[in-house]
Image (cartoon, rainbow, N blue to C red; front, side, top):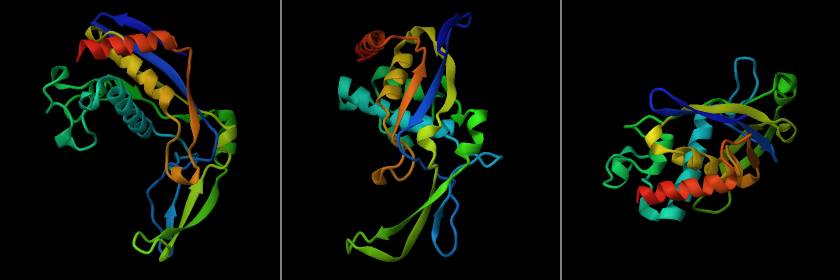
Length: 232
């Protein structure tokens, strides 16, 4: 469910529920390596259940937002993340911060939004915890063939297509920004098609949905175009 309300601090509070519906198994890495083979385990909570961390969601949505802003307002309309030296506020346009940084933050400016973790419903917790292993062999960049000692194992959520993951994105947007940051966030959510590791091998394809979005699709497009034109 989504809603907006204006608060006394001249900010607009935004809260939207997002649900990831995967079409294929996914892998969000936990970053642990084994000895005899490269092990790519899933990121799991304290009870052993895989989930999608809000930080990872924020990162992929920022990437989509950059593509959208450049497509609508030109290549120079968004800074170049993730290197701090190529990100705002080193830019003369948009009042020192580009629309993407004003929505998702930068090293010098916090995002107005907090991205919560996306998790399975309690009733589906046992099912989502059922994982599988996928084996692969690394390919040498120089030979273009299978490389020795490059066996890897990827842990995946094989039941992902049956289990939606849900969470909340919320925050307080400065009133002076209007609905621009919210519109960019909604457009990025709609544009996202896949996330996680192994995407070139078919993992992580999904639809990201917003329950009761606070703006209609037409309003979202209009608000975003207006915001980008004002700040050009």
